[in-house]
Image (cartoon, rainbow, N blue to C red; front, side, top):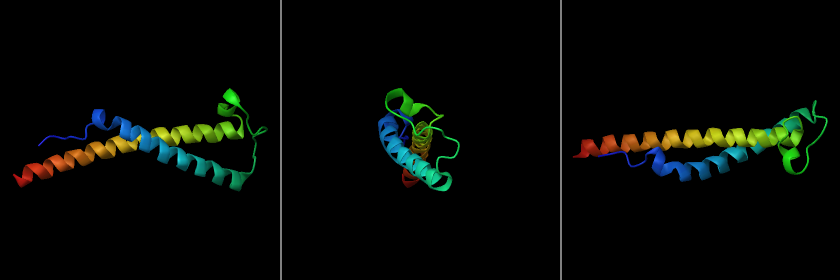
Length: 96
């Protein structure tokens, strides 16, 4: 048997599920950081448009955390699905 769960076939699934899960975890990380540190050394909470992604503001820092966590989860999903496909292919070969 062949691995049917290649990265090319699972990219969209990995992208959606990885970013939804990862960005959710990134926002929880930001909320926990806010509860633990308050504003800390962030002089500004952030703002609209491009200012929302300025990492020197609190909102920008949390937004970047969400993006980084999301990208990391996409990679984790792609590796996990590919490895699962490899294990299924090995198990299918053993059955025959």
